[in-house]
Amino acid sequence: MLFNSFKMFIADIQSLSDKQAFAGGKNSPGHNARKRAWIRILMQVVITVLCLAMGFYIFLSRSSSESDKKYGTFLIGTAMGYWLR
Image 1 (cartoon, rainbow, N blue to C red):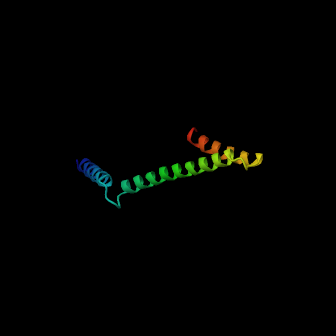
Image 2 (image 1 turned 30 degrees about the vertical axis):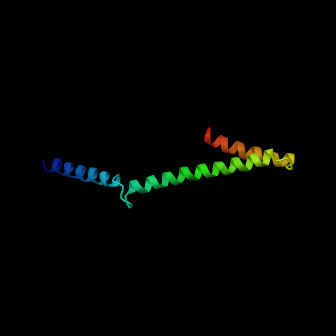
């Protein structure tokens, strides 16, 4: 009987801490995880856009040599391959 009461007490504390984590407090683990996820997605998009812009510029530039165009193709393929994995 005492053990079941203790288990219920622990379960109530855990559910309370879970609710507080998703309540949106700035120091809660849920807030930090959402912030890290947002930053990760933002950085993925920024790096992809930069790779595509540089790749297309190098590939479509008339002053680029054939060996430079290979690097442009590499940048475009890397960005596309990352998102299509």
